[in-house]
Amino acid sequence: MGSQSKEYVLITSSNFPTGGPGASYLNLFCRGVKNNGASISVYLLKGNAFGNYRYNGPRHAVTGDGIPYTYLGFKQRPLNVYLKLIDHFVSFVRLLLLLLSLVIRNRSSTILLYNSDIFFNLPICLIAKTAGIRIVKYAAEIIDKSQYSMSLLGKISRFAYMINFKYLNKLSDKLIVFSHYLKEEFLKMGIEEGKIIVQPNLTDFDYWHSDTADIKYTVGYSGAPYMKDGLHDLLKAINILSVRGLEVTLVIAGDATFGRTLLPELKEECIRLGISQKVTFTGLISVSEVKDYLSKCFLLAITRPDTVQTRAGFPTKLGEYFAMRKPVLTTRFGDMERYFKDGVDMVFAECGNPDSIADRIEWMLNHKNELNTIAGNGYVTARQLLDFRVSMKHIMMALA
Image (cartoon, rainbow, N blue to C red; front, side, top):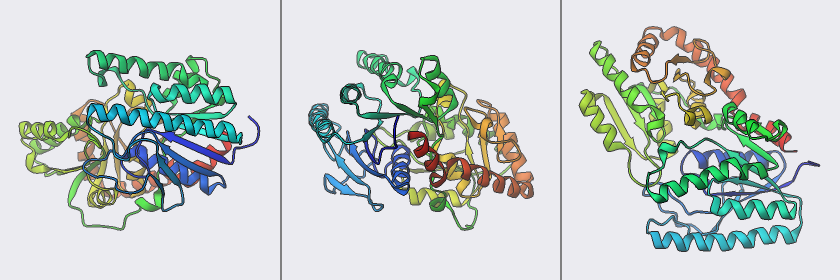
């Protein structure tokens, strides 16, 4: 591919630099690019969307780490369908002007594309390939068909997503994927192995380091509690432990970042299971508040089921859990067993099995001395794998 590009242009539909796991990942990626001697600028295809927070800053801004970013459309993502259409049109026109400027400047820029919307990806890929501009795409997950509605619009969205996944990804010079499952899927499509970079997410271990705090909750969970995250299994496990006479509490820190809240259904499940007094829901909160809640937990848990979507992805929260030097409980999904050992780095439970999750939580409560060693081992292993200061050096070499 020639010498490494010194100028990167990131185009994304995610929030940036804050506002959910995608924003966190991209912010760390950009910091890593800059730390390794290259420049990077960010262009946002969509406006801010993070709960009730409204972005009131300028259209062109710079992060505290010196990363410039620009909103191509509206600064705030609209809910009204007509405003959405206007927003898409404005963003699309400005995107074309951005691509034209890259072609005219004729620099050795590399486009980084973190977006699954074919409406934007198609012109980006076609213009980049025609003009000889390098393009690197991210593939963070496979969105299961169950996530789309059965309406005509839902079917069209699903079709467009699959076109992007199966065909537009082939136009990339490099693919950054979050799992070996995704790597195997792309190899089956005929993409050369040398073009695929596997990096399971990024974490700022220095930020997530936490001083010892008084324990208030037994189990902590952070992130948007979607069905794919296995929260129902965890709630059932809390109920099982309660029936066994164990006083176990759970805090769930987070909610959907945009649109309808996910919490009412989970609260109803708690009422049905008789554990409402044992479960605390924080709602959508800031990263610093998440950190504060997790620091007060005895152990941190991820109880995802074994599905195509969970095999293909890698949870952002896992690195954050390990960085806090807390014991981690996770189910055996995706690449977990590729990187970590049961009873050495973390504690494993079986996917989709509340009894197994309950058994492992109970074991952890009865083996607190062993957990100190396990938490320490997990921290060391995870830091080498997920700390952006380490990982981005490897990524930048692979992009060369």
